[in-house]
Image 1 (cartoon, rainbow, N blue to C red):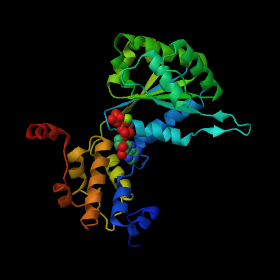
Image 2 (cartoon, protein in one colour; image 1 turned 180 degrees about the horizontal axis):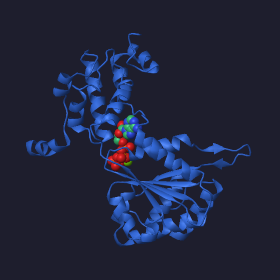
Image 3 (cartoon, rainbow, N blue to C red; image 1 turned 180 degrees about the vertical axis):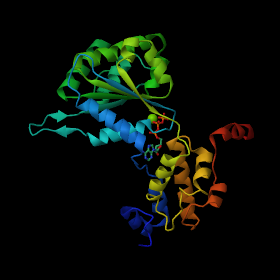
Image 4 (cartoon, helix red, strand yellow; image 1 turned 60 degrees about the vertical axis):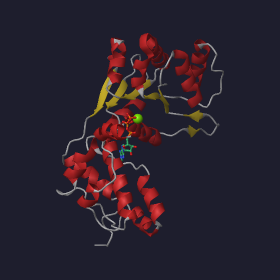
Length: 295
Ligand SMILES: Nc1ncnc2c1ncn2[C@@H]1O[C@H](COP(=O)(O)OP(=O)(O)OP(=O)(O)O)[C@@H](O)[C@H]1O
Ligand SMILES: [Mg+2]
């Protein structure tokens, strides 16, 4: 067995880098295909091959903040990039946008246009922008419109229903599927239009539990951290500690692992230990109130 069998082969090379470069590598986002993410991605892939029909199926990815929604959308887009046909026409299977913070219809169409790289006058009336959106989506053969931060729809107040109707109209006219992603409030956003809601299948990202799947995630992540010695993150000593610190979202666990790995590199310990975690300069989410009181 090689000395660095706890690392994936491309990470072993990173061990020779200077400390600051190794630390930067630790902070870079990585992708691990954990079971639930793979299931949801399969669900999304099925939308791309769904025949164009009167009622196109939609998916709502829902989960708390930091639990991997945007990362799944990013992965989905990564798998289905824009392609250019030999005649020079672009084919974009997926268009990904973010729902504006306090959206109205005009801003929504502008967001799509900017994401398509189309400059336009923001002050143009909504119907003009909408026409341009439709023709461009058709031209680029977009099959799925992915809308992140769908929960922002609830900030639209009374006009949320109109926006939802606009999205439904777009899906009906072009026969494209909608993939929305958002926190729990995204479900409320759909309540104003039961017909639209019935077209959505929920894809929930539950809170993580300290179970086999969590241990598997830790073991996979360890292979991506350029530390010279094994930390055995999935061990009985370390895993419950990591979980207890911030384990119920994937983002919490990853943030913690990145910080711990950087510290292990900078202090020369070369592995994440229980003691290192105890001494980590780390603000737990609940500690913010304490911080606010102190300053
Ligand atoms: N499959 C994955 N493999 C490795 N790390 C991941 C994965 N998914 C998410 N992460 C990590 O978790 C962090 C939070 O994920 P993400 O931004 O996707 O959450 P979110 O649900 O969109 O949060 P928010 O609701 O706040 O937008 C990411 O920055 C990334 O570091
Ligand atoms: Mg997000």
